[in-house]
Image (cartoon, rainbow, N blue to C red; front, top):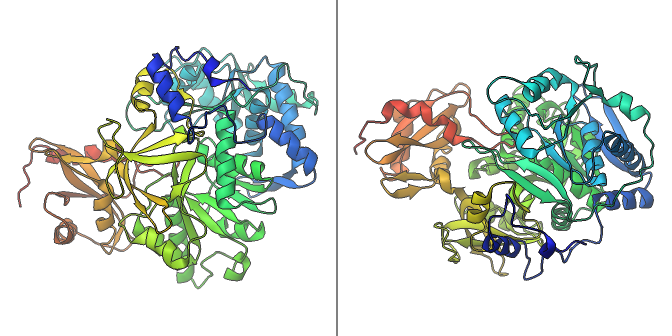
Length: 595
């Protein structure tokens, strides 16, 4: 294995020796250096080949397309198809270390392309089609991808983005475009299916990739500024999968279900890499649909599914509608008995409110295993333990004002440091910045020396999230997230967490979603606003919302203005984008609010 000490950090990403040392420290685990691997596999391709030999006939991937058509691939079939796609990429000149961009959807073809890239040691740069064209064009240029594979339905859009002459568009580094599915509207687009027909099921690699080969280049979904490219290596993915599989107690006879987009690390790591690592199976859906969610869990005997808070809300609303019509809350043809095999839901990647946790678990009688992680830490860094009693589970989810995100998994350490970034570690109950150190920490932000210097300034990865921890009788640290440090509302120098305020808003009858928004104000710098989406048939007034808040919170912390709306901007992983709602409060910029 290549030693990290031999890597030239002094490049466009790592500006100085001190930052390099800090980054190396942030990738250690209890003094165990990054290159001292926790896994026995040499690469993702090596793991796949091992599975194909050991369990050739076992089903690895089940896929439902947008029309509900079902297909399945055994481990051996999947490995052969990966080899064919790897040969296709090699035939187009893609080599180890190259970047391969994708503009795809949740589909078996997408999964095969990802694994083919990792087989030859190339890096996948998946694009989020929900982003605007100029943002995708920037990412394509910044990633320095040499080829782009595009789902047929996005062909025209891809041509505009890559070849575009409009301001902000164009990616001259993309030398080849391969269309996957459908007939190409452009003569110079290569046809994926035609290229695949001539490829062999056996793949001879020019050189073998290692755990240190870059594997994913994913971009942060921040609401302001240029997106930052997170570079992960193959070991990051396998190490995190190793820890997730152990924590979740995933065995080869179990199935996981994927309803999240696989352009994001949650969908990729939790429900593609982790099942492979455990020798288990995965059910891949084109997207989440309330009408088929529980049906497919029942029919496919799924044990675990990974979701975001938004989907829990959708499940509850669907159950209410079904019950109102006299149907099963699970959907047509599904009863509670059909779900006896189901273990729990993994939930993270967005703000989870105590009220939503309680509503869902009371409604369905299924546990939510809350967790937390970021792209920069490959995926999950902590979860609630699986061995909690019902009372303990409820205690950690409901009794602290925030649902706990759980305890660190084996691949990383977690701690709370002062929010000023001075490297002072805090104790139990003290609020500060959540920081992570371990073998799942990214290689670095690509070509962002400024961000790398600040993010790793004292040898831990600084998440930018505010939180705290409490200790149980076994000495385990249970962490909590209270908000993004940059989203804290700074009213005249006093900072309030939007999560605190939102828990109160959700207590108001008729509030479906309530967000606390920091809006610009001439008197206090920032003031507190509330953006409310009401339940159907609700008819709340601003006065009612303000009165309730001021009964349970101080005037300073309470919203001063309420804006009602019907839509909330979210990322594809379900995170609310509060900063995009600030312009709704511009009319109150010059207003001084008094008690």
